[in-house]
Length: 284
Image (cartoon, rainbow, N blue to C red; front, side, top):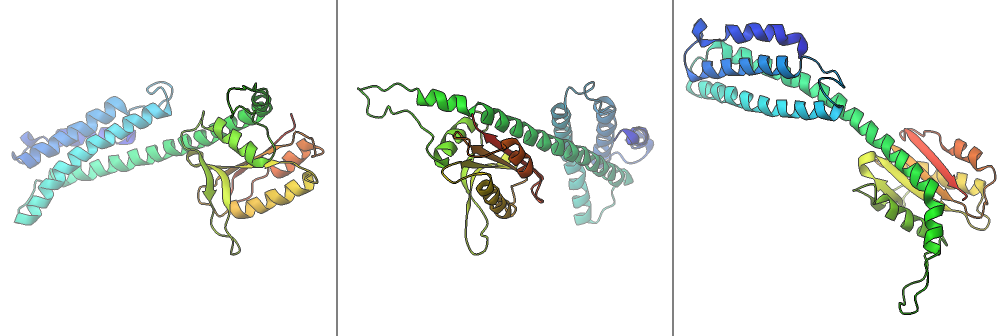
């Protein structure tokens, strides 16, 4: 848009009805739209510097969304004139078509910038989600310890402490913690069928494009068994349209998995189309 400000300044002056391009409402609307295009872009979008003209990408995105709303208004007016002229077989001032094309060029430029900003926002959301997941996974044993210390109350029947006995207990507690951070937490998300069967992802964070899978070690469940399960998960989850990232949380309080950091590294490798995989083994 910045590259066109000089051209739009000339258009603003050249479409003035006083220059002989007509004195009807159609010519007046074309001139008004041309003035809007120049003054708005020269005043608000001469620089996209962040921080500077705009405090953040979100600030710029909001400004562009408002700009497109104004474009809708001016394009709508000119479009009405063009439709009416076509219906009555009358000739419009040439400035109407000229300005309309420039409004469309401005919309294309705004759309391009908004798409780039939106992609950045999605990446940021996904990165932030991974940070939150790591933080919850790190503190998970502390939460479990607190839940297990719950004191019994003889006057209440349902006062037993929450103990982690299997991966469903892990999933239940971890999902509860996720709801403190995410508005859209989808447990037991249905997956596309694979080899004639069906499966469900433990949890989907749709906005972040991240599937969270939970494991808990047990007798005869070691690093070998974990590797096989996660490999099977990759095959299933790769078919889910919202699975761009995967976080595997393994709760191993009995330390069944030898060399947990090595296993994490081996299983934290992208598996296209899954662009990022994080495996977190918690033995605390």
